[in-house]
Length: 242
Picture 1: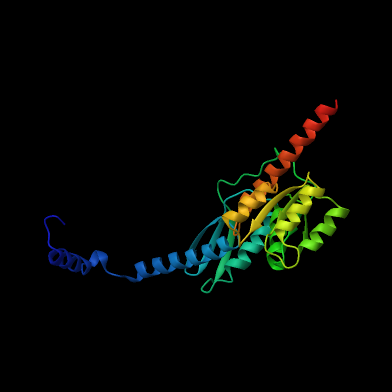
Picture 2: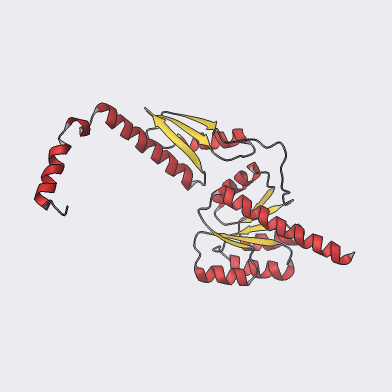
């Protein structure tokens, strides 16, 4: 542009835009429509916490699973249902991606029970199912009072806790849990948090602070990390006792 005026540059752009290589064709329009549809399906899946690859051709959508999961057929049905809820999708095929390998041996141990506490019932039920696909045993309650009652009868090793709930809120649940059941590791998962909330919950003993939406594999890894902390503490106590 240092040697060309704005008018000359605009004229050059307009002149070249009319040339055949840049003209819209049936093929280019179709390619753009396929791209847009794949993007819309991908957004719908991401909003539900799925990290996958999506392509589309003439309304036929292909979804590639990128990460190892258990209960693959269950996940395929879920992905297919979400994708076919997007306008313009004619059919959906869900496949394992080329880099997905099924390990024959798991190199990690899992908590015996993970308690999910959230008043958004549909969300937390779906979250429970997705964690179970990753070999995490879960229980679900829908408010703080239920959570405190549950934990008195059956102490989980890890709790995933929402902050904003009617009645007893997540901060108060966290405070009571860490006071009366200090060995329970609590992961905060909230859609309405703030830096102040994060600082407070960490001060009260929360293991981690995550915000919705969260990728399910990120959450599952955080649960495993929390359980690893529990195992280390148990090993240290056993060593001290001996």
